[in-house]
Image (cartoon, rainbow, N blue to C red; front, side, top):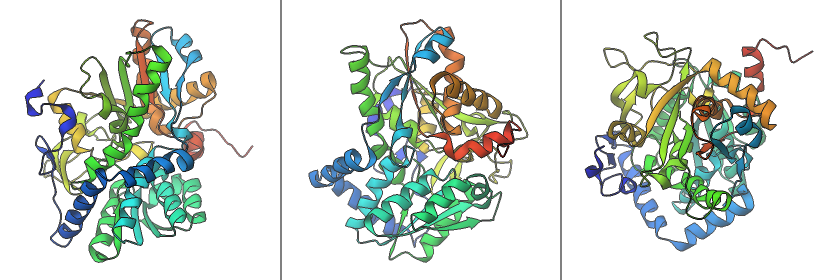
Amino acid sequence: MEESLFNSFMNGPDQNGRFGKFGGRFVSETLMPLILDLETEYERAKTDESFWAEMGHLWTHYVGRPSPLYFAERLTEYLDGAKIYMKRDELNHTGAHKINNVLGQILLARRMGKKRIIAETGAGQHGVATATVCARFGLKCIVYMGAHDVERQAPNVFRMKLLGAEVIPVTSGRGTLKDAMNDALRDWVTNVSETFYCIGTVAGPHPYPAMVRDFQAIIGKEVREQIQLAEGDGVLPDTLVAAIGGGSNAMGLFYPFLDDSDVTIIGVEAGGKGVNENMEHCASLTGGRPGVLHGNRTYLLQDQDGQILEGFSISAGLDYPGIGPEHSWLHEIGRAKYVSITDQEALEAFKLCCLQEGIIPALEPSHALAHVLKIAPTLPKEHVIVMNMCGRGDKDIFTVAKALDIDISE
């Protein structure tokens, strides 16, 4: 493991926004002044006690943090192996981890005098969170969403509209998250002066990957405290597991533990129909190679000519042909392990979680849970696994019913 790259894993990125050879800032000249202004404002906010005081107040009284760390007793007994804890971020206001980051970005937008907020969304959770916080502060909200995702995430589309957002279906490409992000970036270039782009994951040009990670790190910070209350002073998780599309919920859980070498870190990508040459998956670290997309250098699914491939996943939130650059770096230096889970495995985990714990998970964390189901029975009973239950599943019930060939109209 190349630990010499940084004295601490938590020191990245460098002054150029790089995690090793990943990350950076690949944007048009039109956007560069906006990116630099955002970086300056965030650096200022990071040391501003009033900024974090407002964040803390909203996290507590609006979002409902801290989210519980729940011991999944029945699932642990069923698997007869390691202890399984779930970080219940699906209990946040809006039903996912996305609002942790959105709050921070919208507060920055207000400090910068921006009143028009744009966002991209896949599963709809980032769009709902952005629409929610914009409604809270009286800001105009435009959400770009792939037309395919608009269809399969209809409940979240309706929620965004109820909250006053304008939802723009994107028909280019396959009509998924990648295409929504493309159109959001086009909007930003066109409306540079009054617009703030609220990115939903740890991707995009610097400073977004680090900034989104820093806002999401509240997840892992809470886990450090909560696991010691549950298991005893000085005890840390033995293994952390989280699903990865772009990777914000995972970085939020992982980041506060990167310097704890005894903590095993596992990210779970979407294996779709199987990681194979047909690329009917979104496991970019397994089946991709480095390239540039959406303003940063990272691992991507691409053909021999460097054209970005569409990828595939039953989960709209994981249906992205790339990954955050910090994940690419952690993968290359070996600090984190990345695996893939197929659609079918995620569906089986979805069903088991419902029946064993009375929790209906989103399809995104169902991928993480599916990997937990694989490893927990092989580990000692004193081994502690913490997985991030990063979203609730009410948005996915129609997708799951269709996949399982269940007629819910009866």
